[in-house]
Length: 123
Image (cartoon, rainbow, N blue to C red; front, side, top):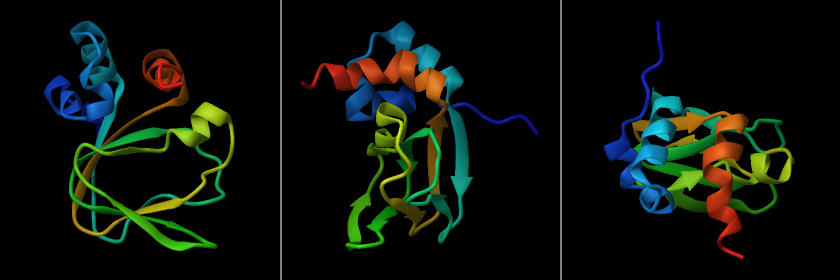
């Protein structure tokens, strides 16, 4: 079954991505895989190697760390998973679905090409 991609409209609602030029946002949308997840699904697990970058389109996700416990909640428009591909380190937290949720994610190559430059501008 082919994976659905995110839409440009959905990604434009993510603050981090909202300022991207339309053609870049459209290219990113085509390359992001959309996925519906059930409550309790673990999307990323602390300590595991993984380099996908995620945006939350619908639902609520919980972020936790082994040593610190519950850290925060993610809501539509939030993103996660940027640390592992940006710094080439294992996952720094576990993210799991608290409610039915919809996420879109991209691989490391797409992150490096289209998303990483957004973080470079922060410094």
